[in-house]
Image (cartoon, rainbow, N blue to C red; front, side):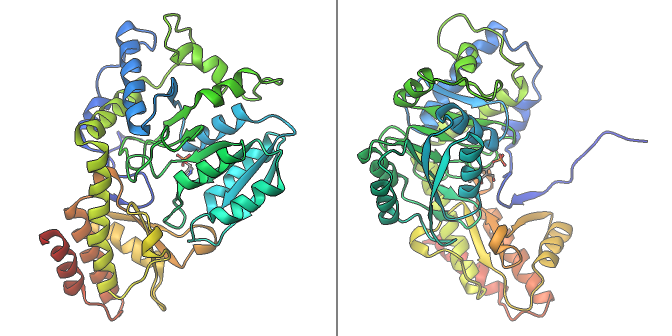
Length: 392
Ligand code: PLP
C-alpha cells in the first residue's frame, strides 16, 4: 500500500540539486493561487527584477522557463536559430555536446571548436573558427562545465563573438550566483540557467535572458519557432511587462514562490558576497582534498569553486565510496560523466550547500571512508588544513 513519501535528510554535495534552504522550502509550501491572480502577477514582476539582478542585466526578456535547464537550453536555440543557420559551438565537456544536438535539431549547422575535457575553451581556437566562418550567426559555449568543473572566460569569448558580429549564447546553468557572471557588461545575448545549482532552489525551472539584439532576431524570424511551448513570442504575452498577460500555460505557481525566495536570498547576501563565499569554501575544500593526497581534473587557475572534479585514487571503487557516503553519512556526491565516468567524483559546493560545516563533513566522510577501504589517507590532516583556511 503506497504511503506518503518522506525523503531521507541528505546533504547534497553532487553536481546538483544542491541543498535547498528551509526558507525556500517554506515558501514552496504556501497556498497555491491562480497563475493569473493579480497577486501572482505582482510576484512574477518581482521575480523578473530579481532575476535581472542575478544575471546582472537590464534585459526586458528575462524570465524563468517552466522546466529544467535543458528546456532553457532548447528555448534559446529553438528561438534564435532557423534551418540553414550556422553556429560555432565550443565543446570541452558533456554540455557543449548537448548544445551541438540542439543546433542540429533546429536544422542548423554546428561548427565545433573542441578543447580537452577539463580545459577552458581556447579563445584562439574560437577566433580561428570565426575567421573561417564569416557567415556564422552565433557562438555558443558553456560558462561553467559541470562535467569537469572548468570555468571558461565568458567575457573574452562573448567579446570575440561580437567582434565577428555573432550573437553570444551562454550556458550559465552552474555559474549563476556561484561565480561572476555579468550578462550586460560582457555582452551576452542569450543565457540560460537552472534553479537547482547555485540558486539552491528546487529543480525544475530555467531562468533565461535575451538581449534586445536577440529579441530582434526572434521577432524577425522567417520560420515559426518549431516548439510551441518554448516559443518566446508566445511566452512574452504571459511574462511580458504590459497589462495583457494572456494565458499560455499553467505556471508552476509554488515552484515560482520558491524561486522568488531563493532570489531574494541571493539579493540579501549580495552577488559579490555569494561569489566570495563559494571561493572561500572551495579554497578550504581544495587544501583538504590535497592533504588527503587526491587531485583535481582542472588546473587551479580555471577551477570552478562550486564543482570539484576530484580524481579517484587507483584501486578504489568510486561507486562503493559514493554508496558508503550516502548510506553512512547521508551525503551525496556525484560520479563522473562521459569520458570521466569511473575516474572522478564530482563534489558540489553550490549555493546553500557551500558552508564550512559541509566542507568539513565531506572531508571527514570521504577520508574515513577511504581509510576503511585501506587507502593511505590522513583524514585529520585534511580537516586541519581546511580549518586553517577558515582561521586565516
Ligand atoms: N547545462 C549544464 C552546464 C548543466 O550542468 C546541466 C545540468 O546539470 C544542464 C545544462 C541541464 O540542466 P537540467 O538537468 O536542469 O535540465
